Image (cartoon, rainbow, N blue to C red; front, side, top):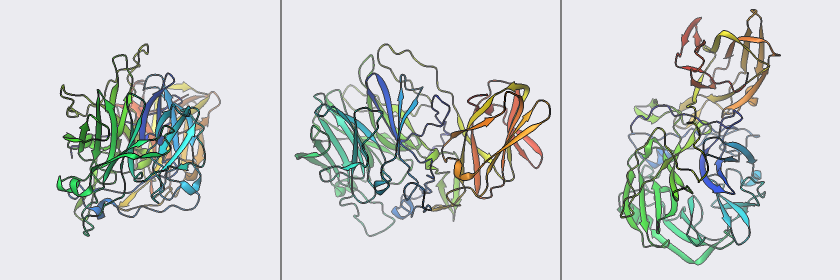
Length: 501
C-alpha cells in the first residue's frame, strides 16, 4: 500500500471538527447536504487489517467493549446533517441520535420521495440483520425517531441507492447471504450482490423488480471479494462500485456497468488498485452548471501514515474511527462509458451549480495528538494577542495495544490548559476526560480581555493522548511545538488552530 501521508481533517464554519465518517453528499433545495455517521462519543474502532494478509480472522476481530453510558456497543453515537453553499463551508444542522435499541445505525444515505413529499434517510442496521430508515420534511431533519425497519428482503449490510432519470429509485445491497464459502477463518467471506427497485414511498422494495447481479460463488470465481458498494446512474448507464471485503482497509475498487438497472451487468474492472489509501464508500451524484458530477466516496479510516508491527505482522496505523473521514474523488468516463482510473489527487476541484462562486481552498488542518504525561504542547506568541475568549478544538485517543484492543474508552487523567499573559501571570483550566470528545470539538477559555503570550496543554494521563488541530503557520510571530524534559521542539511550518481569540 502506498504511503499517502498524513490526511487533513475538516471543520465546520463555527470551528468544530466536521465528523464525516461514512459520509454521503446530496443536493436539495439550493444547498449541498452531507449526512454522516459520528463516533465522537468513544468511537475508537480498534480493528486493523494486516498488509500481508486479507484473512477473515484478522479483518474481523472482536471489537472493544464500552461501559454503560456510551452510545452503542462499539462507539457509534448518531448521525449528523450538514449543509453548505459551496462544498467547502459547512454548517451543522442536526444531530440525530436514534433510539438506543436500534443504535449503531451507520452509512446514512438520504433520498427524496416525490410520492410522499418527504426525505428518507436510509441507514445500516444494528447487527441483527435489520435495515432502517427515518423520514423528515427537510434534509436538515428532525428525523423520525425511533427509525422504522424497511420492508423487503436482502436489504442489509452495505448498500447504496441510485435514482434514474424518471425518478425511480433502485437499491444495491451485498447482504449477509451465501457469505461463508470456506470453513477456513482466514478466508474472507463473499456476499451475494442484489439490485432491487424501491416502491415510490422508498420504504419498501418492489418484490417483482430485483436481480441477483452476482452470486457469492461467481464473485469468488472472479478472484474477488466485494462489499462497500456504490450505485449511480450516469449518461444512460448504471454503475456498481465495490471495495474488497474487509473492515476498514485500503483495497481495490472494482466496478460493473449496464444500460438497465436490473442488468445484465458487464464487469468493468478496477478503478483503483489501492483505493487511494481508503475503502470504497458509495457514490455521490451532484448537479453542476455543465451537467451531473459523480464523486466516489472513500472512507479514510487511516488517520496516520505510520504502521504498527505486532508479532511480525504489519498493521495499518491509528485506526481511530472518530477521527477518520470520508474523501471524495470525481470520477471521469471514457467515450465508451467505461470509468477511467482514479488518480488520487490531494486536492480535487468539483464543478458547482450555476451561480455559485468558487470558494477558497480549504485550510489543510491536521490532527496532532501529542499532549501526553511526558510531553506538553505549547503555542507561544512573540507579539501578545488581545483576547476575550479562546476557542479551539481538542480531542482524545487512548493508545492502541494490539490489533483488537486499546487502553480503555477514555483517558485516565484530565486535560490541563494554561494560558500565559504578557505580564508574566497565568491562568489554568481543567477538563475531565469524560467531557472531551474523541472527535475535535471546541473548548472555551475565558481570558477576560487580557493579552495572551502562550497557550499550553498538558496531562497526567498514562493511557493515551489529547489532541489539537494544527494549521499552516500564517502569523509567523510565534512558535508551536512540544516540550519534552524541559526542551522545546518546534514545528516551524505549523501553528495551533484557534477559532477565536
